[in-house]
Image (cartoon, rainbow, N blue to C red):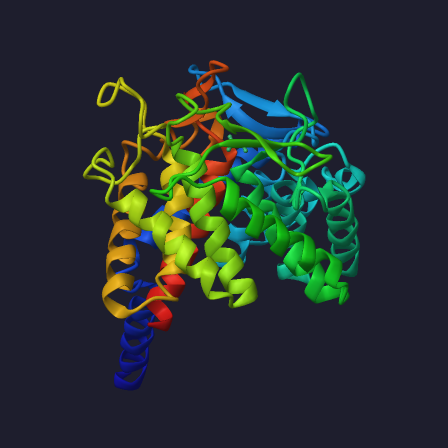
Amino acid sequence: MQALKFHIVSVLLAGMLFSCSNPSTGWADKALKRAEKQALAMAVQLDTLPGRLPRSATPEGELITSGSDWWCSGFYPGVLWLLYENSHNEDLLKYASEFTGRLHGEQYNTSTHDLGFMLFCSYGNAYAATQADSCKTVLLNGARSLASRFNPVVGCIQSWEAWDNFHFPVIIDNMMNLEMLMWASKVSGDTLFRHVAVTHANRTMQCHFRPDYSSYHVVSYSPATGEVEFQGTNQGYGDESAWARGQAWALYGYTMMYRETGDEKYLAQAQHIARFLLDHPRLPADKIPYWDFDSPSIPDDCRDSSTAAIMASALLELCQYVDAVQAQEYFNVAELQLKTLASPEYTARYGTNGHFILKHGVGNVPQHSEIDAPLSYGDYYYIEALLRYKNYLKNK
Ligand code: GLY
């Protein structure tokens, strides 16, 4: 009897120890659990909509979907893969595979630069989780399609098709598509992919940044001579403003290029961009940026949760490449951003918000589109950042 009691107490104690999460990451575990529940509810809804993928929601919480050719199509499948990496819930695996398959045709799409977002967030995470050759094939075809938009005279991948006087528009967001090319180069041994990515990153460093390391959203070039014909914006407040998400894409992009190449100039660039962001007098105390740092309506303007999520994810990588003092500063900002995003102010209640995880994203103000709305990329980088946060603390 005594032995049995001892056994039961031991089992209970072991169970308690197992179920108690690390005190410093317990809040992140809870945030991930809430996100998983919401993402699975989204999956049930999406299952009834063949071929569609989540894009945003109406103010009443109705899901808005897109076809696979929309630049955001890969983010939700990516959310499922990332959540699966965290919990190994088999339902996540099932839905992640199903919805990733909806992007299959995009590997041959040569009409957009967004293939990195679309395919690397979906099939890239699928390949990381499964090592399936079928995913590798899609990614390599996608990398070929993306590289077909490179013009060696300009030294860049063309973002959007030409219109009016915009002969070869390139947007700062395009830095995010380079990760798939760097991956393709390593996996295939074809150095052309790496050449395209590195040349694009270098040219963007020359032409997209102002002396204070803020970035223009759009630079348009002459495809014949490579000359800069326009520097300005399409999604920001004005041509000389710092559109917040663009700064976050730049921070993430150069941090990733440093990881992939070891080239110190990319690390320096990422650190300069981080300084611009962290020292900005209009970065609020909770570190969730307004949609544009130069909006004259600040402080009565929208915050953009997606910018905060992208920034947090980038800072949690960048803090691993810098000295301890710098690392602590980056980590503290990212932690505050994530804790704010995990609060009820930014995290949607279960079953609301079209089943997106985060509220208060800003898509495209000049186009009056998706303002103060959920955004699939906000959710993706939020989950990625939470996982990076947990890994960083685990490996510290
Ligand atoms: N790539 C478009 C955006 O960030 O809104």
